[in-house]
Length: 272
Image (cartoon, rainbow, N blue to C red; front, side):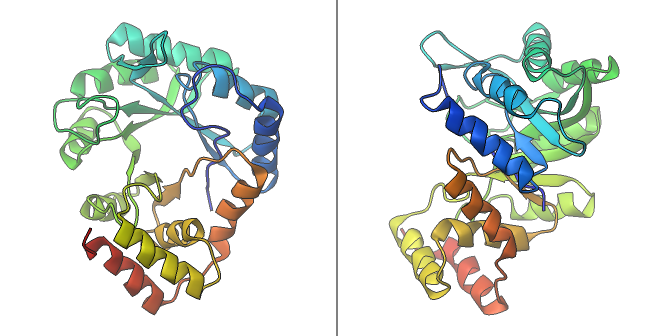
């Protein structure tokens, strides 16, 4: 199973435990993780520099997927950065700090509703066209999209081949059910983030009840549910400790029965 280990979540500035982050990365790859999610705007540059320090030269088969479309202000704020020049600069920064000549996957992060908003409809053709040009230049191998609607996925695919879609999706947040199934039919990966994000108190309680019945943590159950939900789902649960990393990886070995899946599927319908 392809999983992701990210040493920190949306950092700004230097890390409090750099050695710990390096250890997490090395442990992840040693445990078989073959998909890392990153971006040069994490830090900025901090996470990519960590990945390079911990893992370069990179083992065969390791896929490092990065994101562009945003930048960080001097105060740590998030800024939209989608002009052709800004996208080229972002790709070049990722190449430089990861020590690569070509990026395996570059996801365009749409921020039409602001830095904290979910997917908002609106055209993303122009930035996808700019990235497709960089792909033609050999700087990018594959393109993906992040924080997008189904219409935006279709628009992007009309411009260039898209290999993955990266959106929030979990037991409670299931707006992309139909999109996931359509992508699976076309062999396109769906990369789910925030496996516990957006659950109400009632939903969290229901998840905890199921977790206790299986002697597992809610996070482990949530990740196992995602893995069974569809064959094209990949996971990118962030972590900053080896213990948490191992808990994430253990979800791959947890088999959920049909009855348990039915209980978990019902959580999305629970009232606030």
